[in-house]
Length: 395
Image (cartoon, rainbow, N blue to C red; front, side, top):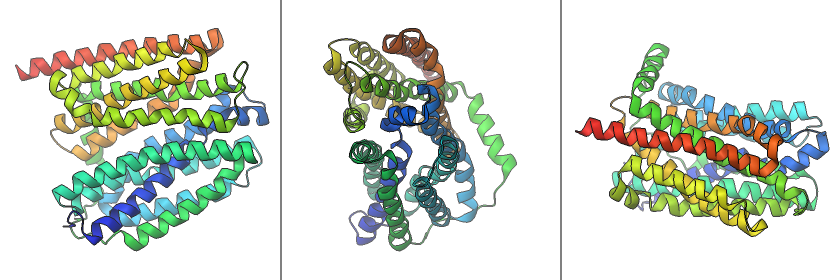
């Protein structure tokens, strides 16, 4: 086993974290660029958002495939294949001339981006000792957030400086570096046991998870929360790009710094859950998101930024607890249970633009908040139902 603070530990964690930064920077870099893409290709906000949400959808749907294939092919091999695919598709994105080409390449890229989140923690669980695993997972999740924030900031900044496509050049270099780091510094698996791919068994496990009410409710809570939370940022980008704010892509990218309070939400999730239990703490997270959403309606730009800081704390609090709850409640095939949660999570993210579009057309940003509060009311009710079911089960 790879021990905590050993040379192999530092090398492998650095390789996985660099790959995580590359993957999540590529996934999220389109978000602050949507107003610019909308102007360049004469698209509505919903049409422009397809270039972002389709990659998210493809990532989510690919997770179950990669999780099963990695059991048969090996973790590192499949991880390298997907990272190379990510880097090549990113390079091709520097040359797109039409929106249809952009969407097609983003779909291909999204399929490649699913390799790391499907494989990384499984690899860690097999190769690290327990003390090393806890620390490594923490670094890995932090790298996910860093990638999402840095990709958005870099994309917005380069769009102001030159052209929105310029961001794909440094992303190609970052992808190539991540490929090299994983190939060079991620050790060969010592404890991996190859298992033949059995489609029937994989489907049977997933159907079993979906029949468990506690798990299904948690999947819905995670997916529906992300449906609203992520896509609020999308529509906020169009609000900030228009009068009276008239912010550039670079300044719009700074809005995503509000994700940083999510780190606090994740860090305090365990302590809060000890007082309220997991479903109760998830309900608290939803209430915090509702408060943050309402806050964005007041005090102009300051109110919007403050509201997003509050919402990010509540979202990541709820998301961290939901992920833990799935792992606790799954009685078999825990890996597929966690992967299924991420499938709901990313499908929710990819469909939120469609859900919020009628509210946007009806009343612009206040309409988006109305639609958000309606969906959060549903996830709050689901959290209360989950709390009741768990209490009944324990009794």
